[in-house]
Length: 227
Image 1: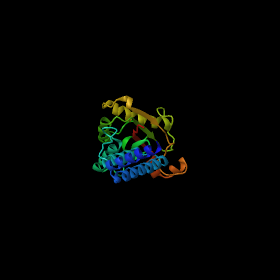
Image 2 (image 1 turned 135 degrees about the horizontal axis):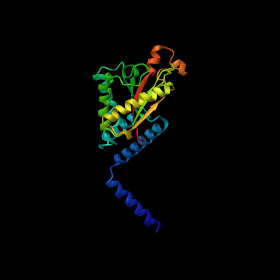
Image 3 (image 1 turned 45 degrees about the horizontal axis):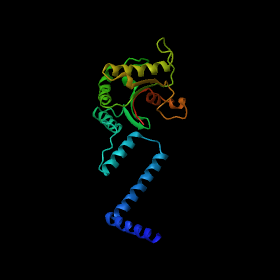
Image 4 (image 1 turned 90 degrees about the horizontal axis):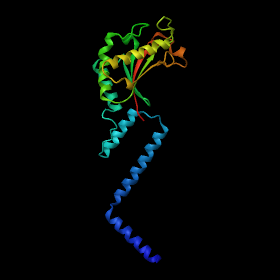
C-alpha cells in the first residue's frame, strides 16, 4: 500500500513538472520575496498616499494591470498642482506637499487676505479657481486649514488668532461652495499659531523673524486621503 502511494506521488510530481516550466517556480518565489520585502518596508514607514499610489501604478504596469482606486488620484492631483504653480510662476509663493494625510496646497495669507482680515483678496480668485477643477474631478474630502503667526490679534470681530484663522478657513470653504463644490466634502479648521510651518523648537522660535512669521501665516487646502 505504501509503495503504491509513493508511486502515485512520483507520477504526480513528474506530470506536474512536465506542465510547469522550472523558471515559473523561480519567478513565483522571487515575486513572493519582493512582496514580503515591500510589505516590511511599508509597515516600518510613514504612509505617503501619493507615493503609495505611484508605487501601486508602477507595479500594476509591470504586471500588465491597472490599479487605479479613483478616476482622479492623489498622485494626479499633486502633479496637476505642480503644473499650475509652474505655469503661473508661483513657485516662490505657493507650495504643494504630500504626507500621510494627503496633498496639501499652502497659500500665504499675504496674497489671499488683508492684514487682520478674513475677506478674500480678489487677486487670489484665479488661483483658487485652478484648484476648483481638481476638486470637481475628484471625490476626496477636503480640509481648509487656517494658520497665523504668534502676534496676538484683538478686535471685536476676532478676539484672538483662533477666530481669525477659523474665519479665513471658512471663507475659503464658502467661496468653493458658491462655485458648486458640495458642502459635505469640506472641513473648515482654524489652528491659530499652534502649527507653524517655519522651523523652530518652540512656537516662539518658529516666529523669531519676519520671514518665519510670514511662512506661518497661511491657508492650506488639503485633499485628504481615504484609507
